[in-house]
Length: 233
Image 1 (cartoon, one colour):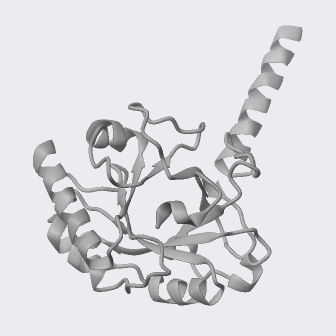
Image 2: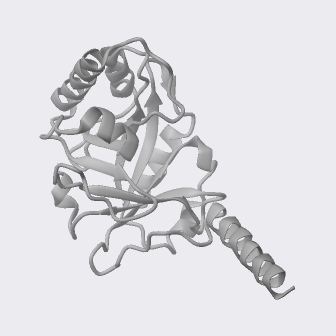
C-alpha cells in the first residue's frame, strides 16, 4: 500500500512539473544576471499586439523582430513592432525565417524589401532550423551555397555581418565548422550552450516559453554573451 502511495505521489509530482514546464512557469535555464545582464526577446505575429507600455516594466535591452519568411512572406506585425521597438529605444533588429526549399537569393531580396538600413540597428539575422521548414531535394553542399549567397547579399546591403540563429540539430548537421566569420545565436532551452568545435556563441536563446508583462502568451528569451551590444556591431 505504501509503495502504491509513493508511486502515486511521484507520478503526480511528475505531472505537475511537466505542466509547469510546458506552461513556462518553471524552466531549465536561469542565466546569471551579473554574467548576462543584457536580456532580449524575439517576437513575431505570434505574440499578437504587444503592450509596449507594460513591457517597459521588464528589463529588456534588445528586441529582434520577425520580418520575412521564404521568398515572399512578410510578417503582418513587423512594421508595427519595428516602429514601437524603436520608439521605446530598444536596440532593435530583424530576422528572416529561412525556407530550405526556396532560393537563397530570392529570400535575401524579400528581407531587404522590408527591413530598413540603419547604423543603430542590430545586424540582420537568419533563422536556420528544421522545425516548421519545408522539404527539399537540395544536397547539403547546395543548401550551404545558397545560405552563403543569402548571407553575402545581406552583408553587402546592410554593411554588417548577419547573425545566424540555429537550433542544436541544425547546427550539428549543417553549420559545424561552417560560416565561422558570422556570429552565432544558438537555441538551447535545457542548458548553457557549448558549441562542439569550441566556437563562441553571441546570443543564447535560453527559453521559448517565457512570460513578460505586455505580451500575451509565450515569448522567446535571449541573452547576449557579454555585457555590451558592441559585440554584435
